[in-house]
Image (tube, rainbow, N blue to C red; front, side):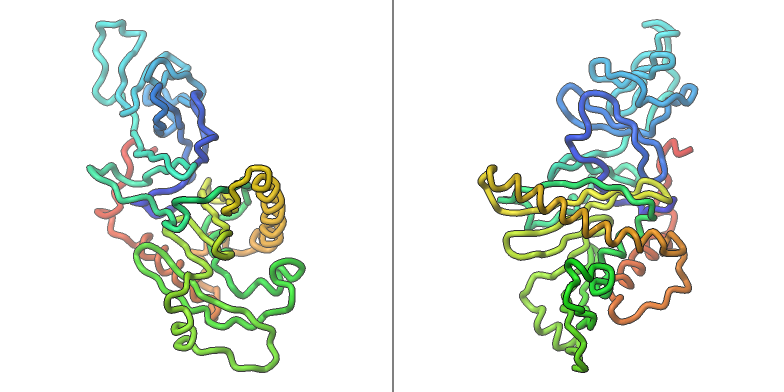
Length: 335
């Protein structure tokens, strides 16, 4: 499974990982997550280098992850610290080690660096406007779709009047003005307005660019897997897309708001969570039918002007796929 390397990816909610090893599939690979006594999270491929048993079925002994098969113990850096069969004085082979992923914990999420180890890492790709003063509720869903189609669906500004005609697309606003799109190495920003088609000429991109100046984008996608919908100054929707495998994408769908009173905030989060699930499910019934599943192979798709944000995503994804091997080194112990 191709997923762009050398990036931070949100892979779990913090609350999903306790003090027991947790085995999950991400990027088409089995990974194991665990916490040391200080609460820090760690991740490795979920395979003991001895005879290939799943480490996620083992235990945490002190600050070591212990294999359930023969008791081999590995520290947070992936170094083997104990092989019971050779005794306390026995020599541990140099190659008996795990690949240790860089992991960060922030914004209620666990982030994993999908790339070669570095001396220093870039900042996490979050949205600065969500850093302070917000509450949120989270809905977790999984779709049987490739992550490229899942992301592109949320960058699609022309489907609302059809897929969501009973909800957010009510009113038949099928005419897309723009969208006006800006992109850089960090992500894609989209300004768009939809209108009922009564024969009028939509505004030009130059007019839309003028209108967008100084205004926050309606949609903002941070590479590689974070999306923000600007509902207003006090409400936002965010999605963290988690590539599970070729056929599955996990969504962490959050509704952010500024209601501080818990007696009011919790019912609001519950209602908005139900609403977001319902709206997302309207998308699901269409997206699961798209072929080919991975949009990187969709050479026969014919994009239109309303698809500018999708086109920008595909261009970025293609650049990542075509990156020279020296810039996307293979991970240690990949097998």
